[in-house]
Amino acid sequence: HRLDRIDWLVAIAMFVGALVVRWPLIERGQTLLHSDEAIVGIMAQDISAGRHYPIYFYGQRYMGALEAYVVAAVAPIFGEPMHALRFAPALFFAMMTAVQYLMLTRWFGRHGGLVGAASLLAASPMMAQWSVSARGGYIEVMAVGTLLLFAYGEWFAARSASPSRGQRFTFGLLIGLGLWINPSIVIFLAPIALHQLLNRPLARVARLGIVN
Image 1 (cartoon, one colour):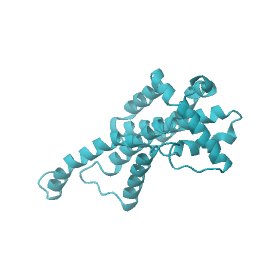
Image 2 (cartoon, helix red, strand yellow; image 1 turned 30 degrees about the vertical axis):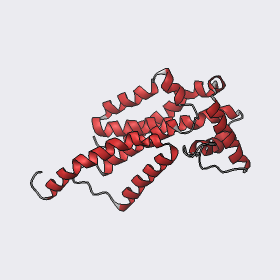
Image 3 (cartoon, helix red, strand yellow; image 1 turned 135 degrees about the vertical axis):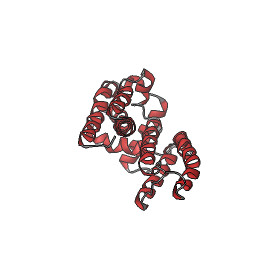
């Protein structure tokens, strides 16, 4: 299915809808506070005050500090710091919902995209909690991983694919961003690598004109 203007408008609606359905959890966020989130909050305060500009989660040598920077960026919008701490991961959840709709619509048609996005919006309580939990980048790496799968399907998956230099650079940037945020991005990279390994011999045969 080729994406058209309606699909992009639906994706925007999905983004907004994801924030709307998560707002009750954002508003009552103090009831879900975890010690890891408190550290992200401290990191965001340090960034806002100009005291420190961390690269990684405090006390770790992995888990990039992207989440803390986003919390610091949205904090001035909210009077309650806890709302900013919840809103930042919810932004990535909303992005993941919109991208998943576009990706699945491209693969399975608009009905498949709607079902996929709806499954995220009506997720289990555990997924709902993690979608507003600033605990070091877990929801962020899922959002970046979804972007990776979408980009790979658009630019690299076809046997006759010839991605541009800009597309290759963007794809590498997404991989680097995912590895910085959380090493668990390998869950998304593994099927991409497997597809490349399986598809490469077929692509060679196709170039030789042996198969269509």
